[in-house]
Image (cartoon, rainbow, N blue to C red):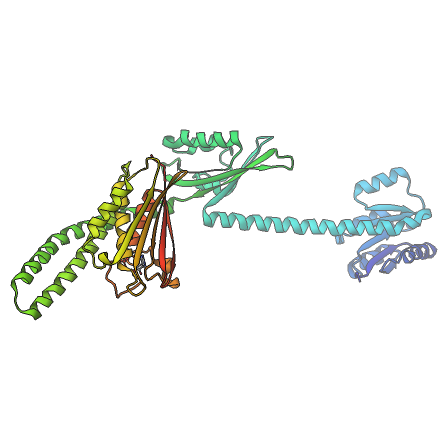
Length: 491
Ligand code: ADP
């Protein structure tokens, strides 16, 4: 149940009080009341009874309604004040309302009193709510501004009809300005964009305006003191229910720190790649000598035990050499310029098999090719050779010696917008829990078969370089199928 309304009645006529209370009870108003008839009592009641509403006669022997109203205004300004009088007179009524009196009720129309009380109280409570909402709103705005300043993201808005534009304080800060220092407008923003990028940014914004499409770009802005900052901007149109663009909204983010870290990382990466590349090259020279020397030694040494040791040295040296070759391959593939040439897949497979014919297990696996390209396909031969070599080598290495004839079926088929190449084997398959890692650098699924853990990593880099994709399906003990798609892009 609602709390009881506290009504303070300022009236000296006991009958009138009785009539008022009668009307209020009739409407089942939930209330308590207090009555006063003198100024002193009234003042006391305002403070102690603390009414929710005051009902006052118009004139009393000692003072009048306006004095009472002034008193109430000082003590409890929000409390509504209704005059209940025998005759107020039109002019007086208007004057009273102008002064701030909430309402008036004629004594011969007392039946309107409960309704007027309810309305007056509702207005007070909605006014209070509005005040709370305004306070909350200011709080939210403050928090938003703090969040924007921490994240270095500002927001802007344009009312398309009026052209009115808004920049949050953080936008000003990102642009090296004090809040409100510059009129927020696209033109002014462009003025702060680095001169080298201004026309590009303008073209993007013009296109977004024309097409009413979302946009995003990164650019540099120039502060007045010459500082250059990197910013990222993203914006879009907001449409009304009829599909008409009414506003454009967006964000501007200061990404200078991220940009600086990216640049540092790029330099570090480059240095690391150069180091690996140089180191691999420099190591391969002496390594070739070791392999050569072990070969000679094996031929000359008669002692079987020593021969075995030399064989082991040779195997280790060869494994190291394979790792170095793969490392160099992956480094070069990343940075290489992709030259395109017509690809003869039959020839490619032939060359791959020739390269691998001395590989252990080669003679035990049946490798077949189905090649049905009916249209010229251009790609980078060096990358494709590496992809084929690694995938065929894996099929040879990971063949299942205990499950009948091992096979690898390679098929090349033309698709609308590219070529699909499938490598399908019935080898040992890959454990489910290892499958998500097999393209990772240095990942090895088994230690019982020798490898570098770089083969599929190189394949993945190569395919990405050709803007294609690779996926696979594998079942432990049944086999593995790699499917590659290479688009015609660039042909
Ligand atoms: P490596 O063969 O040198 O170990 P790869 O990057 O070529 O490295 O392959 C990563 C892992 O994926 C292998 O260790 C192996 O466990 C698994 N794998 C790759 N190809 C096959 C395949 N055709 N059949 C079964 N397992 C495979």
